[in-house]
Length: 315
Image 1 (cartoon, rainbow, N blue to C red):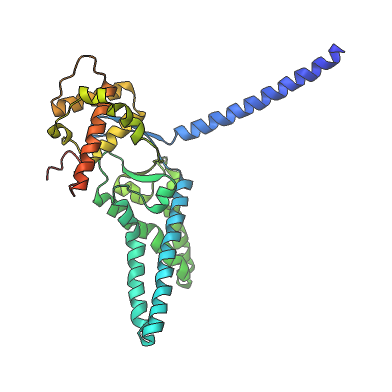
Image 2: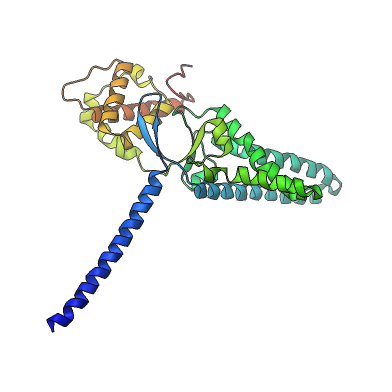
């Protein structure tokens, strides 16, 4: 009786082992795939940060969301103008249509620039999927980079789309050229390891994964206790040493860097603000305290209409 049950138990164990091995291989394959998207970025302050690039599918999804938003705006404006013109002056339809074409041009060409040149560096589609644009050199995302990557979009997508809509003018060679043109630009993010568009390559930018996190309370909770505030009494001049850009970098350092990097960044900040290290002071406690006072100082200045972009902004 035991002999007949033993093979069944062994078969069950083998089945479980095979299933576990399959799951393990799938998990390892996914980890390898994700690791290919990780990039190490060294900021101008010397902090090394690990970033995850957006996949081609994520970028395509964000693009489709933005296209839907653009068309919703354009169609709603068209219908609204038609209603207003029909009710007020039916003979002004040509003027209204001309105005709508100008509006359509601005939405099509400046929608991405308007959102990406802001502080969040992301369109609504990118924000919905947790993506943002970042400079590949670790510095600030400049207006020139945003303009370059988005004006190239017209060459990448706008011109091929218009060409295909016209059908190549009835010429087979022109149609083939338009198809190849479209394929090269549209599929370019798939065939490069950094998932960049041609516009990203020219502008020196990445599109990275930046999911929303409840970080502010976690970072500042330890630094806002009465004991900590008494130990770290920073002067207004010390709090004014850095700006919004450095605040974001310091946030990333506190969130995902190693102790060695925290030590390097703490040393740089102490040197910058002429801070003398106190007995028993740890690098983490110092960084948390300085993050809290810097954030509070920048928020106060924002309430007064003063925006300090970075440490070089001395106006």
